[in-house]
Amino acid sequence: MERKVDVATGESVAFSYELAGLGSRFIAVAIDMAIQFGVVIAAVLLLAWFASSSPVHVRKISTPADVKIAQAILEGIAIFAGFLLFFGYFIVFEWRFAGRSPGKRLVGIRVVRDGGFPVDFTAAVIRNVVRMLEFGLGFYLLSAISTLLSPMNRRLGDLAAGTIVVRDGATQRTAALPEYDVPGERDDVLTRELTPAERELVLRYVERRPTLSAAPRAALATQIAGVIRPRLSANFEHLSDDDLLVHVAGSRGDAP
Image (cartoon, rainbow, N blue to C red):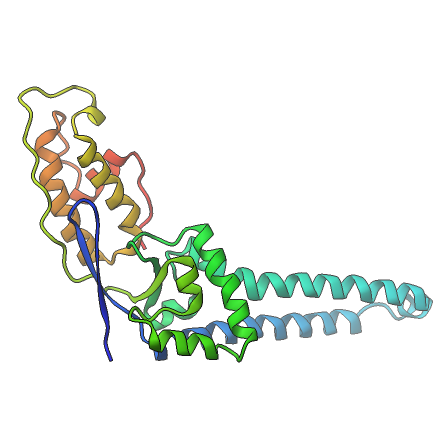
């Protein structure tokens, strides 16, 4: 059954998301695990080739003690690399790539915080620490049960981290923006030409910008810029609505 959630902000801007279902989430996990195990197989084959191609005289002069030390070092490296691959993989992609691992990107879903904000490092770590526990306890069985029972399709990691998984491009509408009185006199300093509420609105937009697909982002930028432009004494007609808001916020940011 299709589920949706409306996320309302303090600036009366609302985002409507279509929640990702259990099937699409498990397909994404399967793709990510295939990639991870593919990396492991490639690494094992590479190490086997390297060991077989080492000079014969080197292998002959190696003592049993040397072999044990080398084995211990390799085992330590393998354990550390495996930990980074299977644990750090999801953290890095969800944190640095707008909530999308390769599997999620292929399926068309992503992780966002339950307030509509992009996933930060802390949230990515928490949800994936819990992921390890979920994987160890019945191979995501608890995840499936939690997702089915939760009104917002949340697994245990999402509940702990305060995140939800949504479909890309599912932001469907924005609510009316608040109107502000235009002051009689304007300060020459750009940041002082806006009220605190207006500046916060712009900053919130720039923070959410990487999580929005092109059409919803353009529509939201147009609405906010319609409030902001009349308040600015400088001429910014050469900037698009999106570029203007990024400029006012003082950070360009990256589009998804």
